[in-house]
Image (cartoon, rainbow, N blue to C red; front, side, top):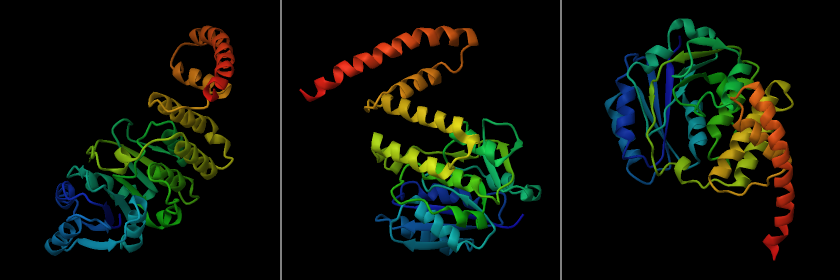
Length: 300
């Protein structure tokens, strides 16, 4: 297998950055380059990156104006010198055998290689990978995965307004690329996620408008491919349920309510489903009548 470029987008992570870089530089597989993309940090992150570049010839540092994680990753891919790309977030770490396990020569026949602790080691098609992603059988992440550089360059044009969900879009667009034919799952946990309260994931407020735009953009990416209809429906149901659990108002119509009932009771027997369908058809009808009666009260 060709050399690997490990790309780390860096933005104000001085507290965690050394741990991240150290975990990469001690890899048992040493034939890689490490690109640290300083995305307009205002703390000492840029200085820390330069220190490592002086200590290890595999480290290359680039400084750019702040543009977000996907912008920094795309910049890194453009500057990389290798055929394979792996992303690591600056507040996380990887195990020392991560790159070695991902990079055996026999993996050259794959277009995407994924570390995952919930699936056995097996091959899947791009269609199966997209379904697993939309069905949340895989994490919405682009970290600790091997991508082909030439394909990545074609799929990283993700809108700047997407701050939460860019990993999801990147993976779906990558798998839908016609040059992707085979995906490899490797059952092992290599990646250590750190809960950083300052990250975009934890600071950005969730809203119905944003989640709706995400769904609309994802639907445009999937196009009219029938093989993803059910998985996309499941994705939307998870989105609606998540908003409701956060106390965010959702326009509850019969489609959403019936879908939530189906989703909530998806793991029960056929007999139980029939009984629930009968029971909830009555409940659903009365909920909608009640909502129609209450709706005018909001404007009194």
